[in-house]
Length: 62
Image (cartoon, rainbow, N blue to C red; front, side, top):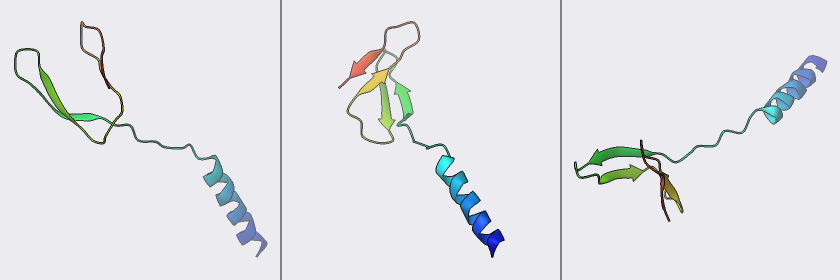
């Protein structure tokens, strides 16, 4: 019985110290019309979106 309690305590300690995993929103389905306009779909709603372009300043949408 002591072994079972020890294993339970160990399992609880490991679970309590496990890193918290948080998902981040991401864009998919990126398309361009050839004129510099880019369209995309976000996987969840967002209050603030920052688009980082190569060779350009980031664009922030609110």
